[in-house]
Image (cartoon, rainbow, N blue to C red; front, side):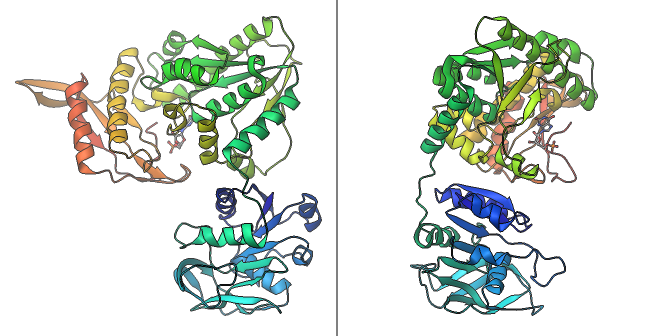
Amino acid sequence: LVLVVDFGAQYAQLIARRVREAKVYSEIVPHTMSAEDMLAKNPKAIILSGGPSSVYEDGAPQLDGSLVDGRVPVFGICYGFMAMAQALGGSVAHTGQREYGRTNVEVLEPGTLLNGLPETLVSWMSHGDEVTAAPEGFTVNARSPRATVAAFEHVERQLAGVQWHPEVLHSEHGQAVLEHFLHTIAGCRPTWTSVNIVEEQVERIRAEVGDARVISALSGGVDSAVSTALVQRAVGDQLTAVFVDHGLLRQGEAEQVEKDYVLATGVDLKVVDAKDQFLGFLDGVTDPEEKRKIIGREFIRVFEAAEREVLATPGPPVKYLVQGTLYPDVVESGGGEGAANIKSHHNVGGLPDDLEFSLIEPLRTLFKDEVRQVGRQLGIPEAIVGRHPFPGPGLAIRIVGAVSAERLEILRAADAIVREETAAAGLDHDIWQFPVVLLADVRSVGVQGDGRTYGHPIVLRPVSSEDAMTADWSRLPYEVLERISTRITNEVDEVNRVVLDITSKPPGTIEWE
Ligand code: XMP
């Protein structure tokens, strides 16, 4: 375990991910945690993240000197580097001269940290103070135009740090610098792999669940697919997965879950065909929020009915519910530890009041890319593991206007073409998400063959993003757009126009509704 101490910057998650890419398990802790509590976790190393621009700022978080007294290897980054320098008796000057963004770092003495790297490293900086003298006994490894000391190390004491941000992609050889610290200076063994993650989780889930039964809701998305498969690997037949087919998925998705997923994982799957029920309640509804409410409500109803059926079958008590919570959600909600206890949803379905389920959240320590790796390790088909995020309310919020079976067919056909063409062009990894939207209440005039048409437009909404909070429209090659447009207008009845959404988020959201 490596602890990443979050000094309040946005970099902590990125650092934690890079540590894991070096095959060493990492967790984020807030800087407000006491040094004693951090050391009690018995970390193999501690990384101090970036943070406010100056150690002199009012209320700037302080570094407890006992963290760097040599008991645990420590690596400081940016603010963490300066805080470390100060705590160890080096000098930090408040120069007021800022160094932001791309900077050339000059290697003075490679030592262990910069071993084998070029003499100049293009690195990402963001600081206003400067370490002017390294603590006694430390080697100064590098400098930059505005940092007299841009990196230092004391290999015997297992302490090192850099002024720049090795975790960001723009910093050349950043991963190598981190790995030199982790593997060579701190002696962390690179054993965090998807094979080990699966083994560990399987053991843990088995121990926790015992003979009890477990229920899981599969949505067709990556997280629920992988968490369910992990629990299945651990407890086999004690698990029942419930897949509510609300009829709002894309072409082939429900079948993939029903056939390929079951084949690959051996999960005992209960498929509830609730298409008519959802379409019935959505009939004539055009307001986006109203659509969401109906879908959320019906989902719970259907799921609870399925749950009651499972409960009614003879067998050990059903005590657990699987949930696909990921590490970023845990960190962002304050990072509580231990399993939360929840009541079974609301009381809508008439389940007994005192029925309590414990949550099993096998992905709560993982990042999305790790979840995908684990999914591959478990043999889940790429078509499911590699899926782009897809909203719970599905295609209902990609039909602007009322939802109907016929309109869903049109949208599914157009969406399938988009997916085929982007996959064929090898663009899936460059695109975060690619909503395809049917403007069902809009018609425009066209001409096809010898005749006039009066059809609907399809909107293409490809976006790039890191976390869906902000997004930019993807600059897709014109040839790909052209193929998509030609195919949709030729192959999909009722559609005679294809338009491209070139709005960033903000101001536009990713979805149209
Ligand atoms: P917006 O449209 O708000 O979407 O920019 C941000 C991300 O969230 C997804 N999204 C949803 N996911 N239920 C979900 O599970 C929803 O109601 C919902 N609405 C939007 C959207 O696909 C994008 O990834």
